[in-house]
Length: 279
Image 1 (cartoon, rainbow, N blue to C red):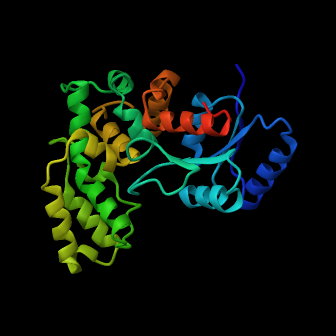
Image 2: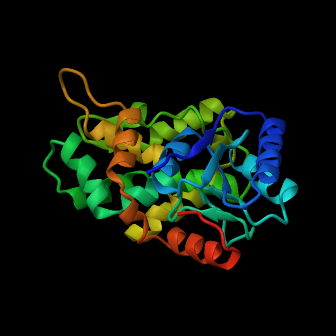
Image 3: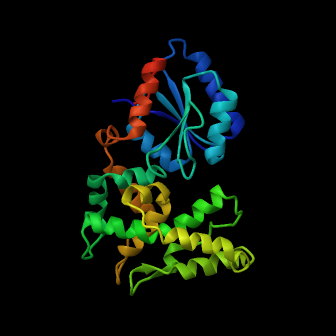
């Protein structure tokens, strides 16, 4: 079994130049060029993609994928991108595909067997695997709604820097949403204290019951893993870091698990249409 060629930490110009040179040298047109968001995506696709796929890390996340794939290689079907959906609706570009759920991590978490593997490895509490996953998804709902409103309504608030660990109450095993609002106000010139209507809107949305599928669509993977780590924290001794848990989640996910996803079906359809290899 071969290995994928991986290009990481390149500038925009370097990525474009590398792809152009590789396309020109690929006389038999055997290779596909896949641009992904970051390091974790590279690790995931190294395990999933066909060895004929050359992987590139975007120079600046999602926007970099769009720029490279849709602006510089618009007419070439062998240059594609895969990214987190986050809160976008519909499918905007023909050559850019979305992970199932909100992002890569949530697509992995959705798989019962995969989640049960990290549950068995790290969690020692009383909840079952399904119960724990449901609790985590529901507790993250409030922060996820803030993230969603920020992106879809253009609120313009800074969210990076909000710590789930700091908002988590060890005794009650709950995220304290008031701590999240307090931190956001500190970071954003008292945004929610001034814009009470925006906070009221989010509170109203939070009162609406969402099912598991809907929660998987709005919850961010990094938030989920950080909260999972908080639930698995040991009272004494060392505990698993979010980074280690994320790595375990990827390792637990096998190629055959991917065949049950909507993304897999889309990639197979695209590869058949354009006679290229992806998976």
